[in-house]
Length: 238
Length: 254
Image 1 (cartoon, rainbow over the protein chains, first blue to last red):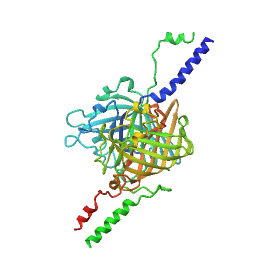
Image 2 (image 1 turned 180 degrees about the horizontal axis):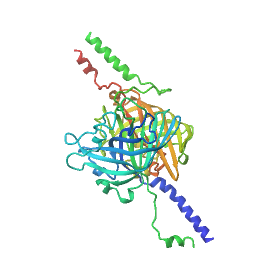
Image 3 (image 1 turned 135 degrees about the horizontal axis):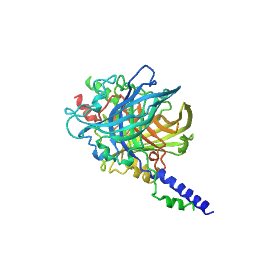
């Protein structure tokens, strides 16, 4: 009877804790970005066929509280580069496309001095080309330039609806390198979600790129937890 | 002759700026922009709320009313002279009047798509001072939609732009691969401006507002919010205009 009562109490406490998780989980954005995506290698005309690669280059549009104090958009140009994503599986039932990618993709953001010391991120056409992705990843001059934070991307999925010309991608990201990684607490380096969207083709998309991309890297709210001992836990059921 | 031309041009401009019809029943096509950069960017501080939505199943009931509130991060040409500068000046926006047609669920391989169309909808962008809208995760969690802060702090100040939405569509997708579930989402809508103090600079060209739609992660749905929306208003190719006075216009022809 006592055990049943304790179990009921525990369940009721969990139930109370549920809404607290939904309302109090403080999530954070690492960066938001905009840019263009392209296929590389692009083996044939079928969009993101098995074996093809997916890449995104672009610019950081804002930073979250973890790294915002160390971002200086008046002094540096901040760019992003998502790469090493290879299509493993493709499902298409008109109008919906789902593409799965192999694990261990990479995503990074970079800082470079503004011209004439640095080079402005330049898309050009038909990437990869002489300026893309190179001008989005290079580091010129002094200061805090170069790759600032990089991470591993797993479980990446891309979905596109050819009827509405609307799509999105989502993957799990673990931050694992770069000098600014010190600003991310070790307990928060895993569990980031890299998400983005792309809309219909339009003339502003440079030749050779597929879509204009908008996205962000976000870590979900943390589940509240209380530190207890095994003894205390066992005592609940005795 | 010069004067006649001037008057004709002036009247033409007036007609162009006065043509601000009601919400379009059928979405007009987007303008064939030729280099249409981002006009308004909004990132982390943008959330949606819906009156009849089930978070667990990503389903919106027919008739449910969707609203979106957000903080602008930056403006592009021709509004790039506007600079969010908190704690002094903030730029906010509110989308309201979006009525759900109900969520349609389809399956493609390992992915389940939850697609919802919303009819109608208007929006307004405000310039306010001082900054008072939620701007941190803690602020959002503490201020549910419908309370004293939201949406009130997103629609105070001067309405610098107002407009109409058309064809607002949300896609949420859930892909299950073995033990792993991946949730993604997006939204997009046609829009055109129809008023506000800066309307003369942007015109009424039809373009796209779209972005990430995060319906699942705990941080994406603080308090009673139903999704986090990150995104942008693309600019249209409408010929830019500079606000002026009749006096200045007359001077050109004297």
